[in-house]
Length: 228
Image (tube, rainbow, N blue to C red; front, side):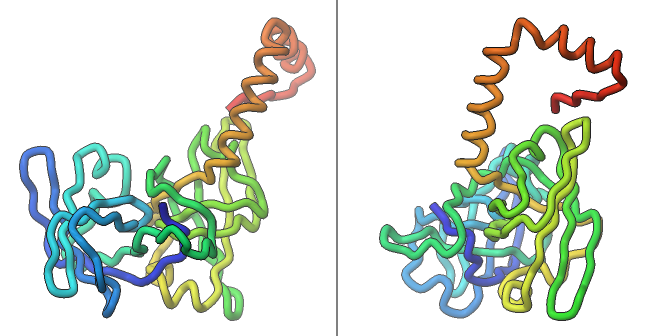
């Protein structure tokens, strides 16, 4: 379990490939690896990885091909920077929200604004994931627990959401160096997902026999019901 409070920025020291597996050696900020052990979990840009070997100020992580294809880790090169967080202790303060480190989808940075002492990032998110994103709700972006400032869902189920970052967040993470078009790992807030899916299932069960009629009526009136 993680809290979404990024503890520092690590850098890729080396990348080595074997059949079906890639090993990343990450160099950590000073003190990050104190007491770290083989088998421990570390959130690396929001992906839960297991320490497979320790080095002075660094550690190795084995990454499966599926993880490489589903997350941004597949694009990492030597020198790439990542947000990192150690697994939360049992009595840890949850300053963000509970994260599993299991990435759901990638989002793209669609726009960036820099009002004074802030940075506003707008992310484009594909269907059906926007159904779980609401203004004032939580979302994890590259392992950082953030609050959604604004969100909009389109008829096809895709959409966008915005987050505002304060200087301290920019200092402690990789977000200050990101540019429009960059990809980010997204983990949906699980409680929100469960509530949305439960409500959708209940509505579908009760209205199922009538949905066809309702859709036909909506089309006659020029309304796009967009069930994404």
